[in-house]
Image (cartoon, rainbow, N blue to C red):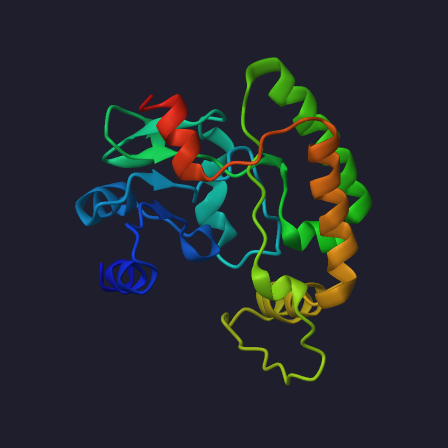
Length: 207
């Protein structure tokens, strides 16, 4: 609630959209967002499996059964449809995450993904929701990186911490720009309408 108010004071606009850090949600997430005044969430990545790249991915197995199209959430379970005022706009995925990280790690697979998602959108109108962090487009080669150990398990440490840290810096900064520009150009060429989540919810759910 404090962070929400701080952003509103700085921007002069009401903050109504939320995405959980690292997509980590809990059973109380929907209720907490409703009580705080959020109207939109985008923390669920339907049919997405993060493999070993995401620490805590075992808690994200519920993504696999989450509704694929945007939905009003159950106030007691953000993974299920309900009648609350909170709308979930799921992040796009094709089992493999459709995000800036995978765009940088596996650009050819991401290119294939966007063609699959394009077919899906033409079939059922599902919006494409691509997540990318601003720092992915900034060179950080001169910054020292400390790898924090988050697990006492040696295998988990190697996969979730060491390997993950190495992969996450691939094609970072200027190398990511042409990949991102190509993605945007694809949707512009196919006559997609770029929209804020606020505008989409107003048009589809509240219009």
